[in-house]
Length: 245
Image (cartoon, rainbow, N blue to C red; front, side, top):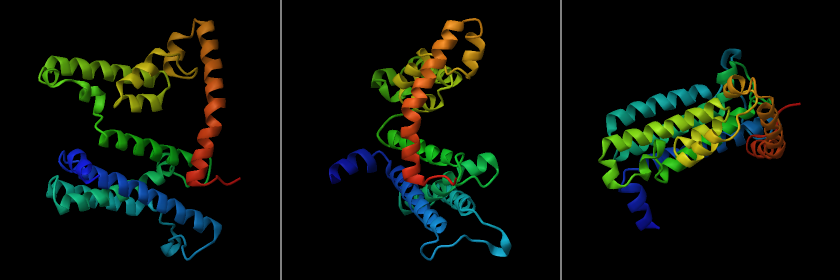
């Protein structure tokens, strides 16, 4: 285990990324546990309301991100400073993304259906961080051989093609596939060649005069949502708590 850690994490300089990812996930889980205890009225924890103003934890999250970012810029990629910066930055990201929905809606939607978006964003961010930690680079550049990596034209073509696939998947209304496809090109290709979501810009532009394609897209989206929405909602509520009724 120690040899693997040194060869795959420490030697390539990925230790700060590992520390940031671990502190990010741990901070999110601890924060959710505390907020659920506050919601249930259990334990010693209470909302922070100095002067009657509810201070959301996104505020200390931003502070930690700023401090961690400046320490990282000043301390380089190795040593105690880089590790400290990574931990502070990861903690800040965990606090901020836990209230992602609040930032988007500019309203306290933490315990509503809209608030579940925060949990979804955290899961997606953690997955992307794990992919990068595992060696995946944006737009599939990691898949190139050493000889191909030295060929600038090959790199440009690879990045351009994978970027285009990710954009097509995004226009087709497949945002999650597009984001993951930035790191895993095959996923972007899968999203780009399949039918678009019925309300996506692609469907409005190209399915407008194709009623059969529009109908197929609608049926496929309905079946997909029926199959996966309940599962995704169960996972999100298990991690983040059920919304208020």
